[in-house]
Image (cartoon, rainbow, N blue to C red; front, side, top):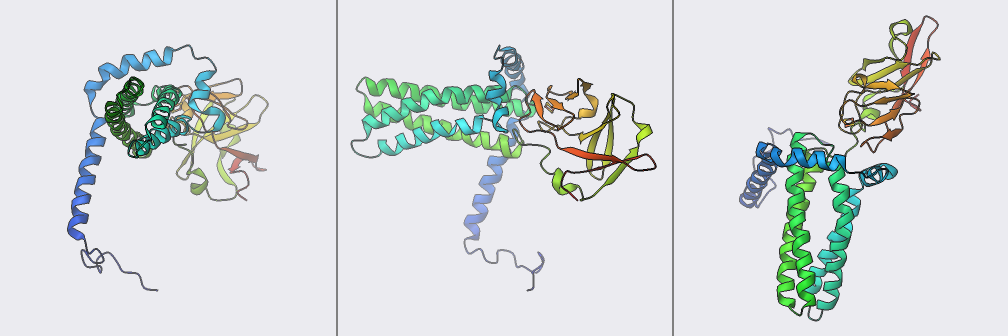
Length: 313
Ligand code: FES
């Protein structure tokens, strides 16, 4: 099979609707620029700063971890939003059909009620983000907040015998929820909110054992950073002489664990306080929803510490 190099492919080949395609590309680029620009709107800091403090101070106790999604291993917010989005989209379809009004109202109400836990889950995730994500996130929240208000209004006026106004408010709500959804997608896929930052490690570390230094170089109870190719490692020598080695890039937002506090068999990330157990990398506190990859260790006869990913023989 012969592959064409980029140079050998004539411009526009294979794209009969080139003019249309270029128009779409330009529109997509403009949209993307607009979405990227949200993260640079420093004026929003007047709102995000106090709001972030307020959300962090909420006495949510163990429910904060649940809302953040720790029990399911990834953020809960994108799971919960499926319900209002589904209910409101279905209501819009019914609104376009004759006689669908009564059921549409039910779905509109269901969407409003189910949007509340989804909103809370979103706020607790949002409060642990860096600046750009905070700014983009607050616009995402504002758009969805207005959508919820419009849908609540739609539910009320439908109940008061004004179905046409209810439909108008419903479609306006769907428009705002769609804008909010698009910004949410930008947050997740472009700005990396919620993704496990250690996922690529498996692909970056060669199988087998790798030396990371002489055992004597590591002081008991202190986190030390070492590089294994492109992967930063946190090495901790425990009081019993055991070596614990974790990826030194926090699964939450890639914070350097080696600059965090090591205590009670755990390390605390210096950025947002996620706590990982040294023995197995389990995330036992803070906003991280994914555990930290750990390495198996061994000492060679001449005192060199070697590591390997479990199962990567
Ligand atoms: S980077 Fe956020 S807790 Fe580590």
